[in-house]
Amino acid sequence: MPLHPAFSAPSPAAVPIFTVSASDWTAHAETGGARAKRFAEAQGFAGKPGTVALLPDEAGGLSAVLFGCDVAGGPAFDPFAHGRLPGLLPDGIYRLSGTVHDAALAALAFALGAYRFDRYRKPSEKSVKLVVPDGVDGEHVSRLAEAVGFGRDLINTPANDMGPAEIADAARGLAEEFGASFSVIAGDELLEKNFPMIHAVGRASVRAPRLVDFSWGDPAAPKVTLIGKGVAFDTGGVDIKPASAMRLMKKDMGGAATALSAARMIMASGLPVRLRVLVPAVENSVSGDAFRPGDVLRSRKGKTVEIENTDAEGRLILADALALADEDEPDLIFQFATLTGAARVALGPELPPLFTEDDALAADLQRIGLAVNDPVWRLPLWKPYRRMLDSKIADIDHSGASGFAGSITAALFLAEFVEKAKAYAHFDVYGWVPSPRPGRPEGGEPQVARLVHALLSERFGKGAGL
Image 1 (spheres, helix red, strand yellow):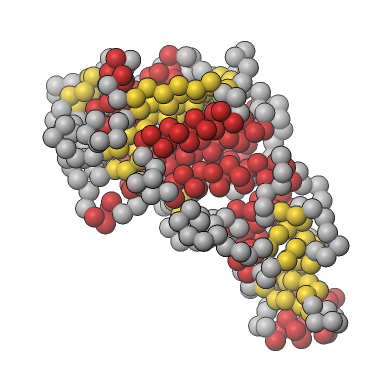
Image 2: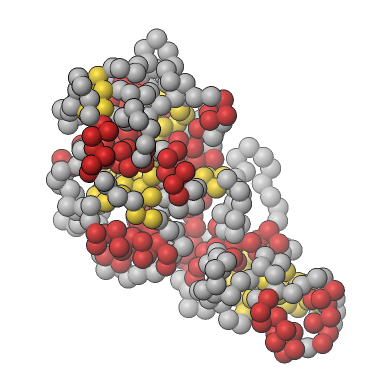
C-alpha cells in the first residue's frame, strides 16, 4: 500500500530532528557547537518536553531541529511524544536522527498527530512529512495510522450524517474493500430474525435499527469475532439525558468505530484468522413507540430482561449481538462499547477497563497495551455483584437500581449472554480525547483497536510489535 500522507520516501533534503531531554541538554549543546547552542537558547530552548528549536544553516535555511522530550522510562515520558511535531514544525521533510526510544512508535505518533478532521471545512494546506526511520516498516505503520484515522472520522462525524444506515454503509464499504461477505438486517426484519432487543432500542427513531454482520478470512482459521456498540446518538430515551450530557452523544457509536478500525487493521495486515464483525446500529430516541422503564424485553438468548433505565440501552443491543456471536463458538470475542460513565469515574478517559474471565488473555492484553501505547486496566467480573441485577419479575434486571459498581454490573450483565466462546473480553471505552495529547488530537479515538490487532498478530503468527 502507499505510505501514509504524513510520511516521505528518503530525501537528501530531509532536515534532521534530534530528540533532547532537559537532563541531557547541556551535554548535547556542547557537542552541537557554540553557534547552535546560542540559537537554541535565544529561542528559550532547554529540552523542555514539547518544545522545539529551529537551527539555521549558513545560507539561512533550516539545518536541524531540536525537540524536547522526557527521558524514556521516566514518570512523565509519553511514547507518543513525537506526535506533537506535525503541529510544531514548518512545512518540509524531516528525519529522526540520534537516539529515539522506539522509532516505530515515534513514526506512528507522527502520523497520528498529523490527523485533521476536515469533512466540514477547508483541508489544511500545511505539509510536514517524516522520512520513515530505518528499520521501521513504513507500510505497516501506514496501515495502522490509516485505520485509526478511519475510526476517528466515523466518531467525529455528527449524528445527522452518521446514523444507523451510515454506520452500516461504512461497514459495507470496508467489507467490499477487502472482499468480505456482508449482510445487514434492518427494521422489523430484526424481529423476524430474533433480535428483539436491538429492535426495541431502535424502534422509536425514524431511522431504522439494523444489525451489520460481515466475515473475512479462511473459514478453517481461528475464529475471532469483534462486536461494536453502534448507538448513532443517545438521547437517553424516555429517561432523557440533560443537555450537557447529550452534547457528545455522537460518539456513542465509538465501539462500532473501534471494531471497524480493528477490522481494517486485521484485514489489511492479512492476519490468518476467520474474522467476523457484528455491529448493532441504532438511535436511542424518544417517541410514542419508545421502550420504557419497567418494560420486560425478551432477548435473542431467551432471557427476559427488566428495564431499569432507558439510558442504559447499549448493553441491550450488545446482548443480542453477543448471543449471535456465541452461537458460532468462536475462539475469541472482543467487544467494544462506550458503555458507562462509571468506567470514566474509575479510570478516566485514557485508560479503558478490560473485563474477562481469561487470566492469560488479560495478562497479554495489559502487557501488549503498554508496549504499543494503547493501554487497558483489568477490572473484576465480581460475581457477588450479580445480585444487583436481580429482578422480581424477569430473569435479570438490565442495569440495577443501586448505582454502585456500574461498569462491573454492566459487564456482568453482558457476560450472561456468552457461554460457548473459548475466550471473551469486554472493553468499556470512552472513544474520545477530551483535550489534545501527543498523537491524539481532541476528538474521536478508536481506543484499543491497535491493542487487539497487536495481540492477534502475536497469537497467530505474524509477530509482536505495533
